[in-house]
Picture 1 (tube, rainbow, N blue to C red):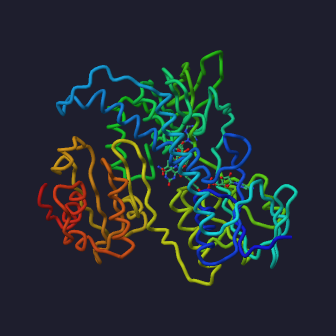
Picture 2 (picture 1 turned 120 degrees about the horizontal axis):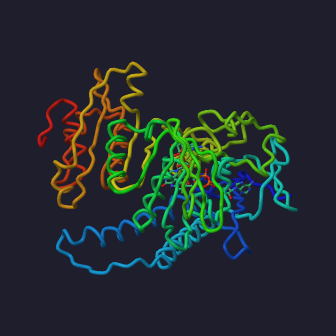
Picture 3 (picture 1 turned 90 degrees about the vertical axis):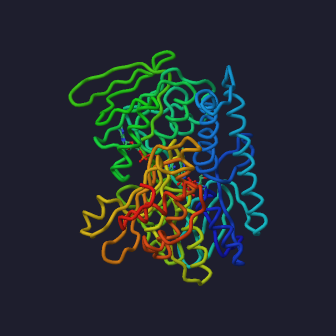
Length: 470
Ligand code: FAD
Ligand code: NAD
């Protein structure tokens, strides 16, 4: 039986990054993956993120944004482009090409770092000082195991997914024509991102959300401003909805729901179900091997991603914490370094969130509501993009930057942004928080003019009531 220092199960952003780092550290490493390639003869690496998540959704978000800009905004810049037409097949091909290049790139990176790729579903056959893993007919042994099996979309009985008419993220990224009327269940990250894609391309989009509050995890002022803007753009978002049933009838999907005691029923061309994701342990044999699973179906781990067995780790979407690719990657690096005897940590308070709508929503750290609940005294400073010269030049003036700092120490404890390019701008805030910066530190840092990032400096000045431009 072939023996490895490290066997990584799953080749998404958690697994492939852990495998590469283990390879860099000189550990004999295998990475097992089962995602079927389109050709059907092999598997592809990259997991949800590269195949049906982060990357294809951002490719379509970019293309659809450009389509809408060309059709509706170029004229205001004095650029005349009459008769803008959509070529969805080309848009989808471009997306597929990007996915193919990136997944192919992971293969090369594994090779470069001497990681052995193994195709198939891994089952934990034995956990002990030397673990055993079955992949079909093959059995391998490993001194350390890293489980990175990710997540799948959460099904709901009211709307069974067939990925043709009623779809999850996989079907919603692959439509070959623009649905005239599109319903989305769930006004979360996927609902808003993919709802935006199809609205920009011409769908009438109705989003049904169960919770009474829009984006409850986000700073409430930003969530309110975002809801106003998305509604202005044409997304029809209804809160407090209970979906009773969705049924395919010929070429339509009939959806029945209620809100505030009122009953509704409507027909759509497609329905997207985006109500969250659940950990994937299917086929892994986790419980039989002796691993603990929590009430939400995730593998139980400590703050270093260790299970109750010292040489078995689990990372990424299959464990507690936000289901984000960069969180999975950080955990992958941490675990590989722990196995190599180093002392790494993941700073869980400094993991940024981004929703890639337009404007984008990005934040790191705590919201005002969370600080109030924890009894932390703080000062807040915000700066609107309408007062930022670069935002005016770009024509992207909706939104603001808000910085929250502890009252006593001035240490930054939360940064919230709604605006164009917030996904990149949030990096400055993450770095500031990682370095334990104060609002004063940011306020005294020279920011290039004219840039959107000046809004971050101004928000930091506003914490002390001394913003210059508002
Ligand atoms: P996954 O990426 O799910 O990878 C797990 C891998 O394990 C899969 O390839 C699977 O085939 C394999 N596997 C499972 N079981 C076995 C087994 N028994 N044997 C062998 N292989 C197995 N996050 C962001 O940070 N930014 C974004 O913009 C973003 N956009 C998203 C958009 C969409 C539409 C979706 C659905 C998700 C998005 N996410 C985004 C979330 C992100 O994709 C996940 O957080 C990330 O992929 C988790 O990485 P992972 O390695 O834990 O799991
Ligand atoms: P989500 O948790 O972001 O949103 C799901 C929404 O559905 C919530 O608002 C929830 O209240 C609502 N909901 C739940 N059950 C419902 C029901 N029966 N009827 C109506 N509404 C219901 O989940 P998602 O949008 O499916 O995305 C899954 C995860 O994937 C995200 O939480 C995130 O971790 C990851 N993701 C990240 C990004 C990004 O980083 N930009 C993009 C897409 C996905």
